[in-house]
Amino acid sequence: MIHVNRLPALVRQHIAALRALLVFTVLCGIVYPVVMFGVAQVAFHNQANGSLVSYNGKVVGSGLLCQEFVDAKGNPLPQYFQPRPSNAANAASKTDYGCDAGFSGATNLGPNNPALLKTIEQRRAAVAQFNGVSPASVPPDAVTASGSGLDPDISPQYAYLQVNRVAKARHLSPSAVHALVAANVQGRPLGFLGEPTVDVLVLNIALDKLSSR
Image (cartoon, helix red, strand yellow):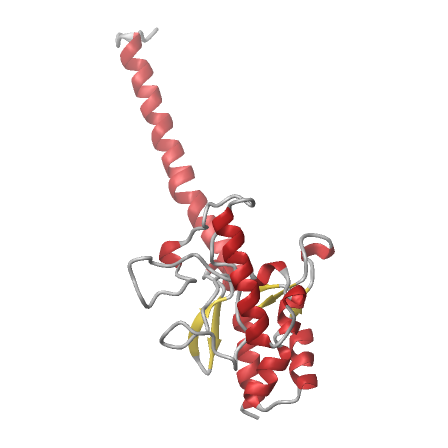
């Protein structure tokens, strides 16, 4: 017996489309996310949960986001290594000094913009004075913000530049602090991508541990 589908072609096409929608919704909207979540939790547990950093049993931040180490007025604390400048701040707040994940962003100023050039020179002078070094020795990442304003890393050059200031503020030997920086330098990913970096939060935690001995 031959069964003839008496439904109009347009209706049959919509039914087929609906079936395909349901199938791909289940596969792509349920099965795939669940599988990826499970793989991530097993193989990349720390990264999948935000690369959280703990100290003394308490979560103090993320290895993916910068933190400001400043006093209540926004002045950098001499006993801590300082991150890159950050434009990720709430302009309406007088106590938001950067590294605010809710306001991620850059200045959007071009490299030849007079306002940006003036800001860079002001930062260069401030960093040099704060660390007791010449302006010529201040590396670029010490005076420029990242595109997101949330970069957690600084260059080894900027970290080493801060060694003497941190050592003096904590009454530690410069050689001990220098060795601590060296131990926290992260090499190039896969050995050739990017540049070596130092995670400021991780370094400052290691510094607190060194000071508490």
